[in-house]
Length: 395
Ligand SMILES: CC(C)(COP(=O)(O)OP(=O)(O)OC[C@H]1O[C@@H](n2cnc3c(N)ncnc32)[C@H](O)[C@@H]1OP(=O)(O)O)[C@@H](O)C(=O)NCCC(=O)NCCS
Image (cartoon, rainbow, N blue to C red; front, side):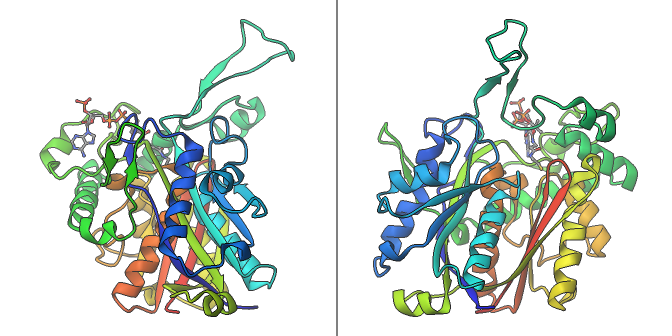
């Protein structure tokens, strides 16, 4: 197998639901970091790009089925460059980067742009054509997140808990206290706010049609506190522990990374941030989907002959504080482990579903380089019960 390298990446700031990026179409949002990569790497011969692979979880609206191909056309890349959209729900962005690295490792490609996109704000309402025709009794769904057009057999076999309910399941079964969840959420905001300067290194501002320029992630709250978090309602269960404050948000974002072979690094004069070691995925019961990183990481580390203790950086997506703490306690880590999400995470930054996995890889690679570490583990849980993990190494 050949080596594959992460050679940089970029993203727009993450917007809040209905916030700063609400007017930006999903396909335009996907094209934004690709255009930025083109501008940031003027020495690359872009005609040699083998593919563009983007994760996207929704794919029911302006992402137009294959948002990666739309982004190629909108970004000004030559029409000869193909594009594929990859869907592993919350891990789609990581899956895209991993599939790109695998294509390079097998020798089928040398240079790929990989990443992810999601505009949860612009997710459409969808309506069934029950009998193939418009039927006034037809169900319709908001596609922001969660189940739609539920298969009754899946419901009977696995239930259809919402994402926050799956976090309530973990909190109840594992005795994860509301106070511990809120303390973790506060930590996420504090670390993210403290890392603003570092995170700015991966952000390309967005100029809106109105002329306004969006420069900063919109979701982090510098003014939150344990008292404010403790005052939030638990709308998902009574009694419950999951709140808007100890959950990730509903957000808009995109991210694109440059993945290259050793030959492409040399040919295009690239600077590798990290080397791809491998990726693995694993399934868990949908009702405890947040545990997905545990079997995915176990499988990957065993395959690579590495241990969790060898990871200098861990980027674990923060779907919910209860979910993070379920995973870290399973790993035997303290709740405030310094090397876990050292620059904060999705509770503060937000979680644009198809984009988040690519952001974890980008931030993990940059953090690994910053601290001159050997290995980074990047991992997410996935709705409907999966986990995906990737290990990066010093190049
Ligand atoms: C939890 C969730 C339903 C909350 O949605 P919401 O109610 O629209 O959230 P909001 O941002 O409006 O927050 C609700 C309130 O809490 C407040 N709040 C949220 N976080 C806060 C914080 N850290 N500190 C203080 N207040 C906070 C908000 O200001 C708002 O107050 P208001 O009602 O007075 O305006 C939504 O974020 C969600 O579904 N998250 C999970 C996403 C998910 O499942 N992703 C996939 C995981 S695999």
